[in-house]
Length: 134
Image 1: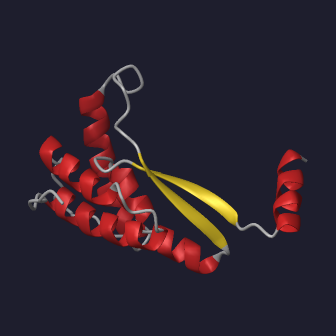
Image 2: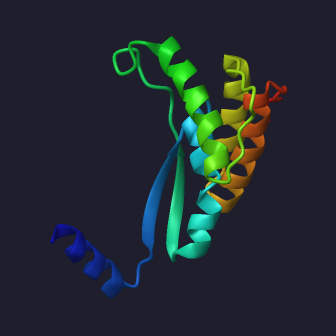
């Protein structure tokens, strides 16, 4: 009921629906998800608002090494099943490369530009290619 009320109010005001997308540059799942932003925006009349997020704190991911290994494996297996791109021999990106990629994405508010650049940077990060700052 609450969702329907918000949707009705949004329609009456002529506002477009918004999706807030949270992207972790060093997260393999985010690399898969960001590849779906442009098709999502093309299929639905929504405004996508991208946000960068840091990795989870230690208390939220107590086995960080295991999480990293499993997420790399998952992304490698899931990508071809959904027509997405992920290296078959992925490498965890170096912290400096993640920071360089974040700095390039930080100023991008346009969802299409954000998605395009995030995919390019993600391909480099997960394949072990260097990412230069700015």
